[in-house]
Image 1 (cartoon, rainbow, N blue to C red):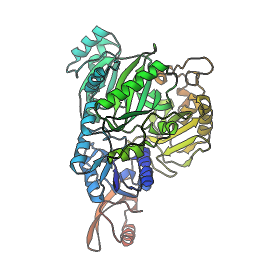
Image 2: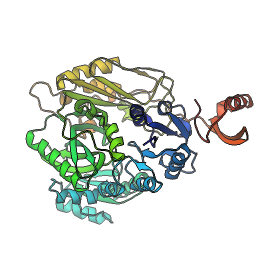
Image 3: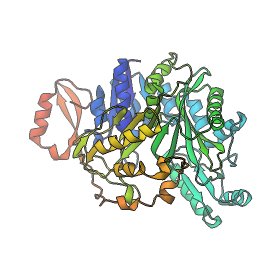
Image 4: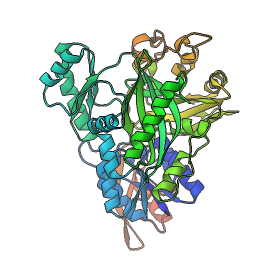
Length: 511
């Protein structure tokens, strides 16, 4: 592997670019017009502009445009990060068909595990505990109603392809099943390109626990560590802990044994996440498999002492993984997704330029950032700004250090989730002081967080990103596509830019 195209943006793209630098691999970033000044562009060795696309298609989802950049840049491998194409088996197939190395599981594995119905069937074969659900996608609302009448409410209507809470609706009354099914189908088709939906029993107040796995592609699978990701808003994770606390030996054995059996059965290659729910009664149930690099990978890296992105790149090249058995966790760590969202207003996007950014430091603190001071935050993009991971010798020390790190973190401009994280650390349901039980669950924020509205800010109005002028100039006899913000597009600026260019490739972002 000589040159890696990173088909992703933001925090994860920066992380992958840094892993490439460690391995001596040339990193190639891509960017849409509104992302040209983003940190992930600066972090890579080279960057190429994605063409503007008509309609609702985003450049980061344009498979052909990404493959074209790979060809122009000389990339021999593609890493999808954890973005819109990271669990898309069709994209993986097209990468492989183009003669490039795909950093991820085999497309067939992605397709099998990415379909939640077939993944449930496979999980049942290896003896995984399951909540009751349909064995196939449902076609009509009356099928979902019949399931609810037979097994009881609430029921979850879930996209068979995809994740992150998208394409998921929870019906608590029979008279809302039909409308929620239609809504789930529409969102699933829009986001994942597939509209199949299945139905299963919905567990109230469960915890979300997952195993980080690493497979060698030959049947060898290691559980690198566990995480608890119960602190969620709209089924998307905000806070995670590793190793997963408050699991007894029997529950931990179910999580690890099922994860190894399931992934070994498909000869899993690379990094993946096997997800579970733990009911209020303590019963562990298989949920799904994520076949992409998780945003929470940095958390597991800290306690396991393993560079997961490095392992991905090694395994993708057919080299052996450096992790042969589950590492002994070093202490305890907590990770926080810092997003440009107003927690007091239902986590609405709250974008504004980053006026000031001061990152925390000290023992046990790691920051994976995706922005810098002065950065514009494009409307409609993932609002994740950085991931903060704080590690201590045990959970109590990790939480104390987290309070210090969040106090030291300064991020001015956008409204962020930092105030939420600070309050959460003093919330008894999360901190579980003394002998009190851990009371967090996946719907705790929506159902039980009584102080959320007090965090509300006046959310800035959504801004329209700067218009980009695209034209073609001739440099030393070569026609070169040129894109620049409309505000700079006067003849003097263009002339100065052209004069500064000696050699360029079409679409490459100049320093």
